[in-house]
Length: 174
Length: 455
Ligand code: SF4
Image (cartoon, rainbow over all chains, first blue to last red; front, side, top):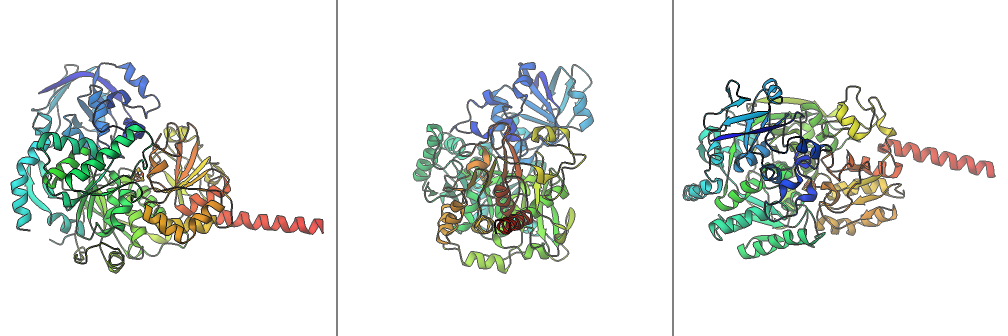
């Protein structure tokens, strides 16, 4: 699977989930419509998005997605068309939510991320765990060996559903 | 190998090791609320019929916006209400509700050694009971309801040893903020914080909950504290709590991936000046000279500015960090016989806390002081319903997050303990309890001089 597209760079650390999508928009009983409110919590969020309206790859700073557990942050990104986020580090809950929503979370050292922030276009080969910026040389990264499967189309809930007999047996023997 | 407390709880719940360093971890309890649960609950029903692993291991409630503020939030609440009924899930509706992290322990749903998850990052609060409790996303929560398990990477364990005794004016909230300032706002990422030491043993269960509540604010997966007599006494006094549970503690000489030691005697009453909870300083101190420009401009502050010079527009006492009866008593101590000078909202963490406070007459003290005494809800904490800030408004708050926009677009939040919030509400600016007492003395002196002049 190749995830390719235009880059939006927001090279700031600690963009939390309240900035990705403020709580006032957490009023639905489904995951729809969140894309419209992406980055409303960033003072310059709308301008940043307007600067690359076709962006599908976000390049950002350390500790992306910290704070609230709201999966709405991942839904807002995918709802707006983003398919990957590249950062030096992610907060744990956001990282888990990214995988279950097939939003590819790429972790790379700060210096590499700084370079990627200047790229126009990035192509990510999910299976091979490599990416190329503007046709340059491949850069390797590592995905979670299990959760990669959820990005490639294996359903998270289906995976757990198949585990139920084993879980029941474990519990019975507990 | 000598194991930490966390290792023991984790090992006892691993159903299967999975690829990539993941494990299938059994969840004893799943907590559900109206904001994050509906999309997952409905998708399970759609995709898997009405199959849940064990409805008895789920407890649901309305907490964030209680009662609903509009039709959309009413639909969220009603979705959880009808789903809980359909599935035979224990449910606490508006009137009998509370913030999940306050209600779950007070109703006896959590005991030492359990695993608990909820679609809410502050689930780490329950680590105070020696449980492994963590926040997760909606889909992971749905998975835990469907299959009884989470898929997790095993976190490392950081021992946070707090030696000595807290000074009389420093609280668990001050300790929580000090821990974050010490290890850094993202210093706990990938770790569970296991709190040990004499200062931890001396904390009440409510204070331990305040401390564990903010583990997520250091990026940690959760916090955890070994159960002891304090835990046992709390559980014994909780109606509905199970009588059989096993006390667990770390092995002597357990190995930790990292250790941090904090001398409790150095903990001061603190207040945050920046835009994350690690950006805090003693109330009688100043904004650091090397404070990041982005935080300063959002908060409209200068490096070196005295924190006590900062005027506030609103005060809030509440949230899953500081809304329990002990917090309300501490605030009432300060409010008694004084008047607030800015709008002040006091929101109990649960309806049970509210009723207890009213039995003790605390609601009269708050209202005599001119504060608004509300029903239980997350309320102003998340800027979603009551008490939302306008751009540029400045609020001192006993909650846990001061992120830009957290309590309303453009609003500025200063985090502090309930007593500091109460003192500041009276002073109209950031101030400690000592500042308030000094002002009282000055006022008394001035009144006496005036009397002398008129005589
Ligand atoms: S009180 Fe605030 S932090 Fe706690 S659960 Fe509610 S919204 Fe979240």
